Structure formats: C-alpha cells, structure tokens
Length: 167
Image 1 (tube, rainbow, N blue to C red):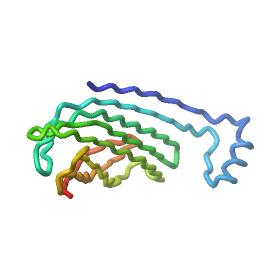
Image 2: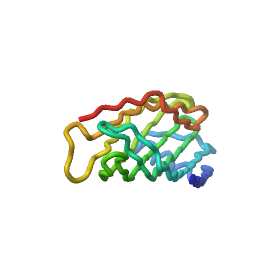
Image 3: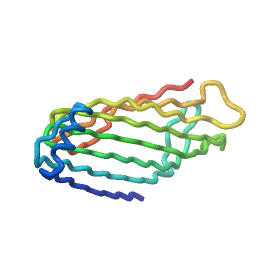
C-alpha cells in the first residue's frame, strides 16, 4: 500500500513588506528581490512492505515494515532547500528458526543550493536485530547508497548500491 500527500504553498512578496523583508534578509543573510516568489512543497509518502524475504546472515528472514518518507522542498529565485526524512520500522521471522527480528531506521537530511540543479549522495545504514537468544553473527547490517538528483527544484531519489554484512 502506498499513500502520497502533497501540499504546495506560494508566497508573493509585496512592495509594502519590502522594508521589513530587506531588514530580515540583512539579519539572516538571504536577500530576495522585490516581487520574488518562494514556493514550498511538502510530500509525504507512506508505504507498507511485506512480507519480503531478506537473505539474512544465518537464515532468510521474512520482514514486514512500514516506511514513511517526507520531503519538503522550498525554492526561490536564488536557492533550493530540501529537508528529507526517512523512517522505517518493522519486524521479521526467521524462516528456519522462527526467531523474531526487529528493524528500525531513521534519517534526516537537509540540503541547500544556490543552483536549481544539483545532486547529493546519501548513505543510509539499517540494522536487522535478532531478538532473544542470539546466534553469533546473526545481526544483519545494510548500507544503501542513494543518489538524489534535483532538477528545477524537484528531487528524485535512486538507490545506487546496497551492501550487507553479518556481525
């Protein structure tokens, strides 16, 4: 199941507020020309996955999890600012042992650019933990390399590489 919510706000700078805006810009270090428009877009996507068979360390684990991704993009005449949050949480059952596993990860990233087109690489680490009596080397660590390409203030995320290790 995938659910996406999107909101967009546009703010027009009026000449009557120019003096206040220039004062604020001088204090904050960000100037906006008169009449400049700032657009803020927030997109929240919630996806439920499962069951997925993840090749674990000592056995395959059937994992069910919930992922919430929120990206807020703010763009103006001379900048693009993106705030991005991922939150994954789930559980799993070992196919052979029936052992219980827990899974959780959270990340927050903030980016700012004076160009409307740029790219950023993000490394995300996730940990699948066996609950109860553990077997040596049975925790699974996953590292994902994600490329975020921003074109005209719109971000697209692509997973480039996934590595896993058992510890």
